[in-house]
Image (cartoon, rainbow, N blue to C red):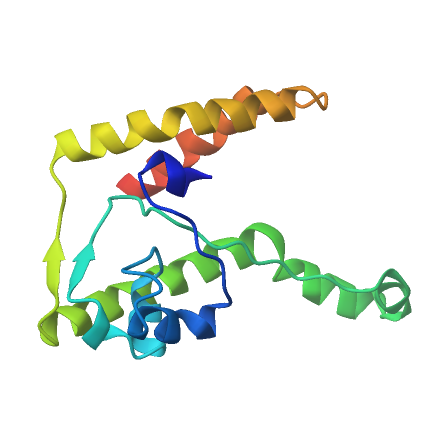
Length: 165
């Protein structure tokens, strides 16, 4: 949906197909983590990298367990898992992903890829084009009894605070 707002046609496929889609010309670029450019060996196919402060895409990961299996664990094991889950897991994984991407960006620079840091005018235009989509998503959530605006504002504030720390 955001691809169309940015003037691009969305093409869907699994991450491992990224190389094939680029090499055959099906796509001319894409949004991904810096380390994916290395992991999928596509550096020779994408000579330019645009660095968007705060990121342009993000992944979501979670840990899930069957309730019966969870209940079968000892209290001690459940406490150990809980001590490493939630916020602790989120912050640890986030720091690890940030570090991995920083290393990957350094490698891409060393390989000769052109790294572009857009100016504020570009970033403002990007936000302006994405704003109607954000509002549509938030409005849709409001229809389900969720105070989406408050949740979004709280998450945005935390993300902004985290980015400055």
